[in-house]
Image 1 (cartoon, helix red, strand yellow):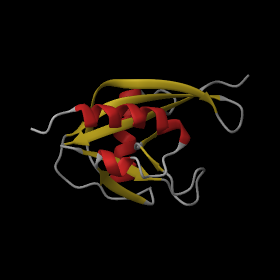
Image 2 (cartoon, rainbow, N blue to C red):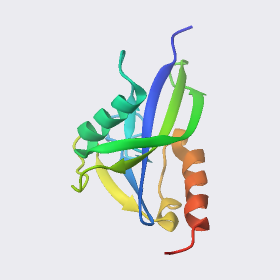
Image 3 (cartoon, rainbow, N blue to C red):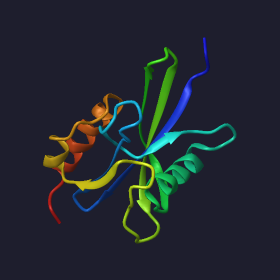
Image 4 (cartoon, rainbow, N blue to C red):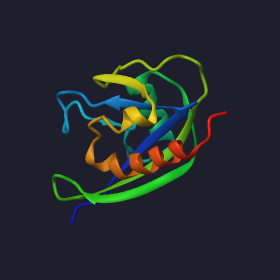
Length: 138
């Protein structure tokens, strides 16, 4: 059995909006939306991988602030995929730019429900949406 693939994803919420990236049309699950992130490279910490992925995909600086959720599933090639979802915050004010993704967008809870989300993110997205809807406006 092959080693598990470790993936990190970042949940960036500002106000009532959540940042999502649209997958490249040339990757698996083309044009579906997901929390930004990617594979953890050998020797890299989960947090360092997440910071690197946000820089490479969106050109923004973030800081992981805590683990939000974790899931595991069997990937397309039959190997186990473990995804660690972090809450993150922006450390710089620049707007995200789609560098290595098709598009990037900020979405409110009602908008999230209408998007095509990659299967691995759906349960966490549902949990986050329920939390956002449970919050009272400031």
